[in-house]
Length: 104
Image (cartoon, rainbow, N blue to C red; front, side):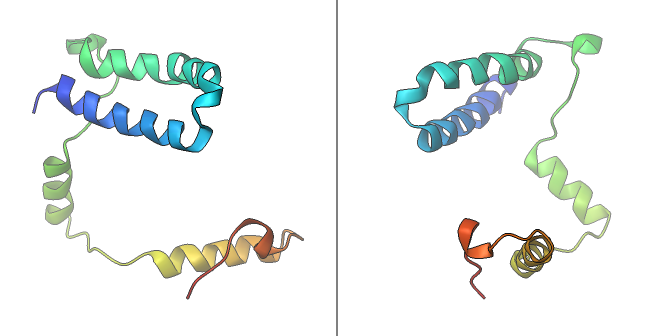
């Protein structure tokens, strides 16, 4: 897949997520975020070549191969996240029910 198509799929998903969370009413804010935060990343992914390119994103397949070669194992991380959230909330003085509900 070309860099343009990869960038198109990735950033359209990111912007769809922003729109779903922020709503269409705040399109001016979304436009500022897109221009300020993501314009450089998009330019880097699509237009820059050679030494001018700041970051080279790895494809999923390459990332998978590297993890297999390094013998990285897949684990279900849901309980790690839940325990970490509980630990953070315990010392914060906040009620966990205010922000999230943990399902075990």
